[in-house]
Length: 177
Image (cartoon, rainbow, N blue to C red; front, side, top):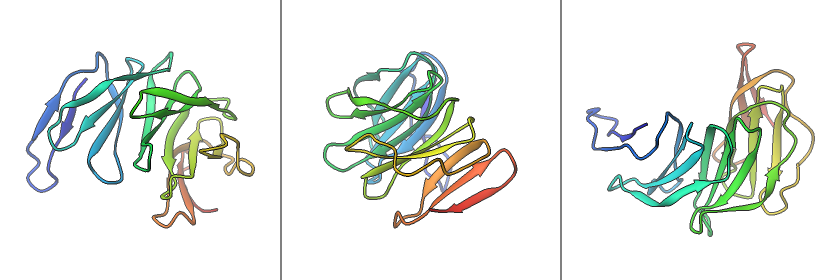
């Protein structure tokens, strides 16, 4: 239920907030480090000012079950990417607090991890359904075919956006594009 910001050197908590009403499952910094996104089992996503630890605006709502993964894009407008036990992967306008377009389709099981490409033009999501999907942010359409054949527990882009990597329940890490 808490979001804690701690400096990596001395480990002391500098900010602690308890505005979620249930477990916080996922947190992510915006690429510029100014904002933190938190996803909770209370079905909401919150934005936090990283310097002060205060909540920014009202909670983002749009999921009907626990929010499991979050990612943030700083490009204009700032966009938040989320996934939930409701099997939906959604994009939110972080300034307005509204869902952008339709949910990103293609997964049939829980999406466990989401990430924006460094340029903010595409997103990736990995799931328990043995799939990794890539979508265009503007179009909302799938790019290519599923990229994995085992349960994916985490996904990430390289800093230059050329490659992706994923972790899996089969004890492996895949790297490629």
